[in-house]
Amino acid sequence: MFRKGKTHEPKNNMRAKLKRTVTSVLPVAKTREGSCYNCGACCILPNKCKFLKFRDNGESFCKVNKFKSLNCRKYPRTQKEFLTADMCGFKFR
Image (cartoon, rainbow, N blue to C red; front, top):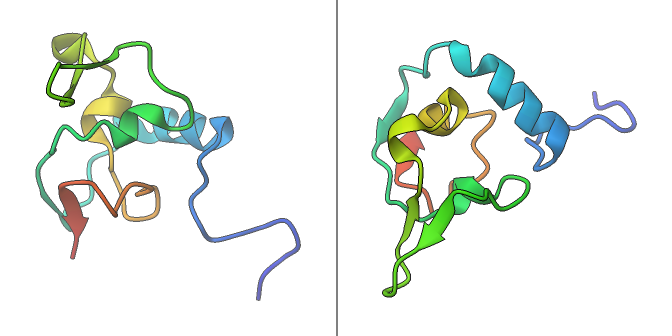
């Protein structure tokens, strides 16, 4: 049963980003497979990160990759928070 205003879909908003940030200290789901394609899709959740940069060929990269936050390093940590499945190199079994 669904409640009004509640959804089981992950959201692309600041509340969801805050939740991903707080829970980033938890381990990544063991069902996650794959690797980062450097598509940059996770770097615009919910707003474009100021450290997201693009090379002349259009490839994205993180300007502070060696120092990026746990939230960024671990995304997607769980299937439930996986908002970029259509373009991300990670998958969940």
